[in-house]
Picture: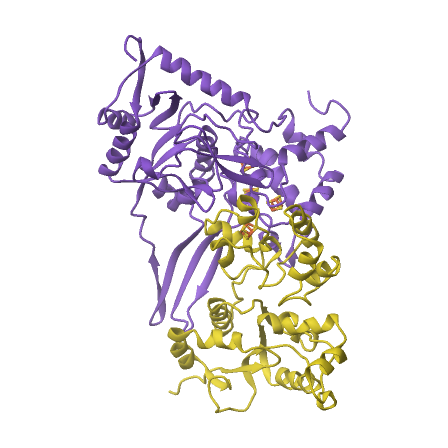
Length: 381
Length: 259
Ligand code: SF4
Ligand code: SF4
Ligand code: SF4
Ligand code: SF4
């Protein structure tokens, strides 16, 4: 706005500027993935134009419940996270790892070509950035980095979204994973809507982001724009649909493997694995080997797996976690507790997907609360 | 040097609609490779020529519904090194197991002019209730890729990569938003065996369980959810009583809800 003092490094773009951003990304060879309405949900798929975005849509979410609804305004990002997460691009749900072909006496391994696409993700929220960082740690940390993940992750361009619309199942504030995205992006947008004005505050997070911003029409942001963005984030933080008391949570779960609540939740749990599939940090996979009928060829495929399947814990002689009780306990304890032992952080970012997309609405925040409430105070310092 | 003898394959039919055998004939491209790799010893749907046993691999379609078939399956088992059952009839008794819930005499007198000529059992039972089975491939009908996988696995002496978890895993990998959560459409996916590739949710329909129970199904919990979505007791009674009506987890759940 004229007369405002510019805020260092921040800019304002309008809807045309957003289209220019999409064009600039594709001119640089990126395939842009962003939010779209499909099959009664907002999913992450290829977007080319601003018109592809879910303009005027929002979602209502609760345990086992998700409905698209019309908004009163024309917001493009006025929804919360949906059934997809970005992991399906970096860690594909089904992926051939290699093929083998018989050659006379032996066989030859045919490697898979690296992916052709370079992606730009549009609309990545703070919780999702944290989930990305967690999966980076899982797949790239340690002495055996995952080559396929590395190839996909390298060269990724991230347009973050400062979250203006939490859902009824969000609790990123409890997990200290949001709603503000502070780093880990190339550009970050805050959608600012007021009567007669629809604009985006742009923060720059990397040289690549700076270069792109320089290539699209923008003007410097002012202090009033920043105040409006801050107010929006504060409002988001105050409207979390769920909360989780994380004090001593690691011990709370690890110290009570025989708590009767596990049996209670097992009566409701379907062991369907939806929670692990939709979770942006769950990383488990299995491999399937197939041979051709003639026995001349073989191939190995990697597929998303889940600790809710029986094969997941199959050791010599059978599955270790036969009861649903022990499978639910594995999932929740891994997410909130043993992840610390394994990777030095929580495995949960509070995105709420596992609550919304559980067909029977099982809610890990409620399960944790029930276990805590049943114990004599205090179980933690 | 002569080629090693090809394994001999047989395909047997019991009480069934032939749909699962047709899945094999549908494998047009792969059939030639199969014919090179195995000797078709017995497959009346494809050829009238038959060769004597023993058979290295027998695929068995259909359930046992007559005294003759109860005898014949014993012979088939004796003549087979490996025996794989294919489809809901062979693995669970099929749609014809609806007779298990009624009095067979009532059907006979309703359908046949002279029921005295009919010799039938009062229950339709899966093959595994009569003879040991090496592998069961669920589905109504089975998926041809899964059938090829099972045959390839037996030919190369490895275990088939046929997962027994729920349809939901296939549904999520395919990227379908859950129809139960996003539309309130009742879906049997969470209790149903994977294998179809989540076809129905991909068309915005609920799964109706044609692959039968998954490895550790929890139908009572799903039924409660269906009730909350508006399904009646009668709906639940009926939805668990289709092609896999006699599979124990589905049978128990249909019996828990009044018609
Ligand atoms: S455990 Fe649930 S709330 Fe936490 S990150 Fe995974 S899906 Fe989101
Ligand atoms: S919760 Fe289960 S599926 Fe998710 S990462 Fe942990 S073990 Fe794997
Ligand atoms: S908690 Fe819910 S989504 Fe997860 S396996 Fe159980 S029923 Fe399925
Ligand atoms: S649509 Fe059905 S099969 Fe798919 S995730 Fe939902 S409940 Fe499972």
